[in-house]
Image (cartoon, rainbow, N blue to C red; front, top):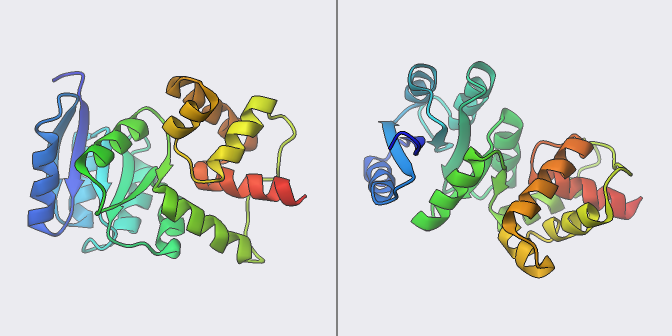
Length: 214
């Protein structure tokens, strides 16, 4: 399994952690290389084992968001994904600001978690669409919200894709809508984020809102 995505699962609830690890054992392209229960465990795994992706719960002893922030600074090649029960917009925003590449809920299916891990491994960012839409609304209500300035450098196709992203659609849903391949949509999203100087889909959604209101 040398070409498998190397994943670590860090959660302080043993039954849940072991359940996630067990799900991954039946998936050929994912290998669980470590488990842990605390923020300290997460840091040790990141620094010593260098997994491709670490799944973290927010409520870890020592703080999941704090662990994600430290990993982002000290091990930038290790991608962190928050896997938690919290649906708080503040937690989503804090996790993304700390450097987490994804935010998914514990109610997600094993297939959804695996697909998210793959997307993160290949350079994408992901927030559960329902949370992304709610976060966008909350961020739009804050007078001191900061975001990149809208750019005029986007192509017509990129603006079209960004509009669909702002509705909470996934890359697969956008590909189906526009009769494109999912790989093409990912390419456009990478270009959109690079041109717009945003780090993830939520910031891209906020940028589109500002463009629409300008």
